[in-house]
Amino acid sequence: MSVTPNPRLVHFIAGAAGGWRIREIRTVIGEGFPAADYLDVAATPPPIATPTALNCAWSLRGATSNERYVTQDEKQQLVAKQEGLGRPDSLFGALIPIKKSAAWWALTQEARRAIFEEKSHHTQIGLRYLPSIARRLHHCRDLSTAEPFDFLTWFEYPAAAEADFDHLLRELRASPEWSYVEREVDIRLER
Amino acid sequence: MSVTPNPRLVHFIAGAAGGWRIREIRTVIGEGFPAADYLDVAATPPPIATPTALNCAWSLRGATSNERYVTQDEKQQLVAKQEGLGRPDSLFGALIPIKKSAAWWALTQEARRAIFEEKSHHTQIGLRYLPSIARRLHHCRDLSTAEPFDFLTWFEYPAAAEADFDHLLRELRASPEWSYVEREVDIRLER
Image 1 (cartoon, helix red, strand yellow):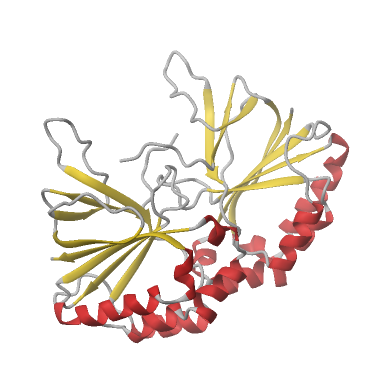
Image 2 (cartoon, chains in turn cyan, orange):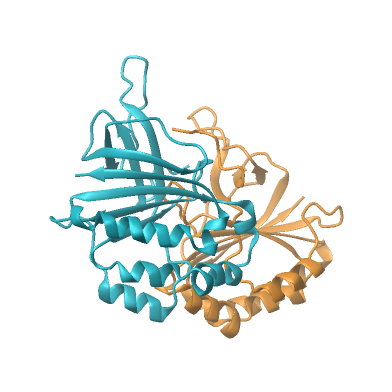
């Protein structure tokens, strides 16, 4: 049995230390999270909590993967406009874990694509907020372990863009796609 | 950290015991496998091999997941014609692990779909061999650990259908989709 981690696996570890300060944890749909002060983003798993070293309040993980919905034309639009993570002026961040319903996963690819883009304009909405709001998607659904969420989306943006970020989320949450979301937590961060 | 396995995760464990006898291991593309006598299909991981208990020659794992390529019309054709695993007369089986190239995974969904079906007729080829040859696909690419393959496909069929099964594989291997396959092993089994 190989025990080499998936090289695209990313761990988000909340606790007493980390590169990002947790400003707020907002429960959007379903069950919320325990409070924590800091979030660390790491390639290695968190240390196992013991009664004398409770250094992990909660942790989530997901793997970056191949694209599932965008067309070649949409991909070119994204590539032309998007910027990478780690920009010096992007001092604000957000981690938004989402779980979709069994009804979503029972749909065919073409039906999911139609709801995602033709009906909900997910990519076109995101495009309007580029390059200010940078984004990286992590998949959890097919990990070896049972996971509480299907996706973890990571965002980075300048503090001045927080109102834009709220607007982006309002647009997505009002879309038909969101009727399939059964759990969502919105974790706001500061570097 | 949750340690509950993904409920859709399946382990294929080759060794000295198991529900299926390994008739032959054929290396089709790339590196082959060590020989083994039996294969077990299990929801739980194999015991860790120790110097005094080398009971596992090799093991692979993958998770059943949502569909990625079929249309609603194709799904209805499949559902109407396919039968489940475990049929009493399906005494032969095959496990075919496949790894596709980085070039495949860099394609968009619509480009992958076009190669898979419009150019290679993957689903239409498979449909012609239903219900005789039953099939279940397992995904490995997004597991938590680095995996040697992207997919594990499991087949069950009556012994009399082995020539048909060979023909099905010849058709798929001659398709444009297979130019993206960089490793394939064909493990033939008997219950």
